[in-house]
Length: 579
Image (cartoon, rainbow, N blue to C red; front, top):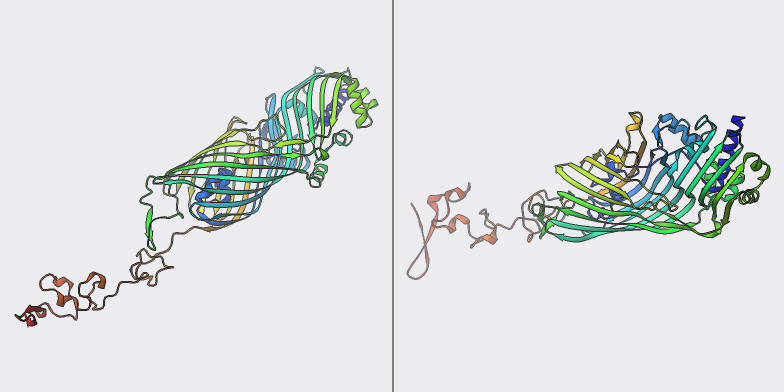
């Protein structure tokens, strides 16, 4: 009888929360998608816009073509990951029983899953002051925030028993569950706002078109449930729940339940939300050796080599992922449940044959159950991202970044959790290696990863410890590729300040006026004609006493045979040989 009552209680909870949308448990999980191992690189293409859109104004690439990128992983404070096999089973069949070693937290937050696929795009550095980019991606995020652990496990795990005294109490306050799938297309402009001596300020703006494919949301101010075994009744007090979705109607949740395959089929056949969003950012570079970095080329003074990093220290501030998606009322289902009441397992099984029966039964037993078709807004995971990048020595840098959540977690939508990351890196044009070390406010623990980029191909993780160590709260992996066209300083192989492209004598030191060729020396005396008073006379014949024998060359007149001109009274020149 005890087991039967436990099953009845779970049946009620499943039905009650299905009505409110909370049993859409998709326990494959992922988070930490910032690609910090390679996004901090100065040769990272559009990956740099993960930190700040203004960064492409100082990109080391002239042009990039994005091919594809994928990011996936796990982050939570429900428990530590049991094994990679358990994660794999959760992804394949939705079984969370072996995925976690649960902790003792009464409430938890879980991102399950986050997935991002970056589609083809490009970045173009138009000139020294302006850059633009086009980016496309598909995003999915399934998130529980401040959810009661016992309620989660009671609904999701058929073998879970809270205690053996026959009384089960479940309480959850100010919780939010949102699953959201959307695509986004962004156009970015970044440019130089100030360039004065050792100071440079850049700004960047991204505007995105957000296309909502589907969402499910539940938010609750309060839910108290008390069940007594043998009593066949559940007492719910202070219920205040709101459910909304465009892919799962309230009626389907009651009659059919949900599973991953049905959900995915509905997601890809129902796309009816849209909105606008974007990013805005600013960077400041301090370049104390700016004068030494400048050079002359092709008749221009004070030119800058944009193919190399010039800053000693860089500060960055950005607000990222602003915006929301509006799902209109036409294809939207909404429900609100409030009130107190008793519901028995027998009454539920005898009275509820369809959706209207359940609604009527809930109202008769003390609950208010209002349903409607209302427009719903689902918010993006807005954050503030602050960072500092320091050029330590040659190709070695260190980056510090703080990410702070700005989203209201009681709205339908998703959010990120605060974190502080230190990323030392080796950074060159063809190769960069970064090692992000992060302290997470979500798990109150450290995580570490590594990112490697060779030319335009990259692979890495912001959270890799679960592969080599036990009792980790997260796991993340990313990879992708793009085609870079790097910036180059103009080649000048003879070092005369005229680029090889403009130099008509690229292997001889010349002047800009002569198109890179040496100035003519008609008498072959060794001096350019423009620097001589008598360009048509042999050099040694023009010096009475001022030329040193060190300037003599083989085959010229000897020093004893130097002609010296003297004037007659009539003004004519008389040549005498000095014997």
